[in-house]
Image (cartoon, rainbow, N blue to C red; front, side):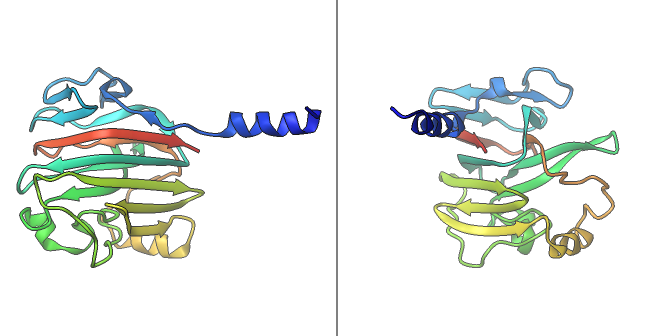
Length: 211
């Protein structure tokens, strides 16, 4: 084999990212301790949040560009989400961009509509009107794609919401959101967070591909 061809093949092999299955072992609580309380593992690659008291979890690693795919379901009137680019803001709060997961037809915040419904960039940008969300108690498939500041939220195989954190419009949306006074919010890299809002939630087959 020619040296140049061999080098190209090796470079392609090394740079090809493989998805990694995330389990409870990849997360800690906000104090850096092992998950406890309401967080349990079930047999089919499922992380089950049984209810209030478990607290939110953050990944041990930080990510900038990545693809995150997972399945999830909530109890009726439930509310939860996955956050990314999570960082400690002002030395106090762990904050990040949130993929909203909620019972749109049962939870008061879901009924509010707009940027508080499933698939939204929470409190920043609302999803498309014709998104393919399944009702509480049924499994949804979601995906987050982050590449060079551009973010996409997918829901059951269709693009639900997208934004460009490098564009002036992003700053305008942040200025209208609850994060407007949170200096350093969404810094371009950070941890992944499984949130806990007191409602029973199932996360299954969480797969992350770092880019």
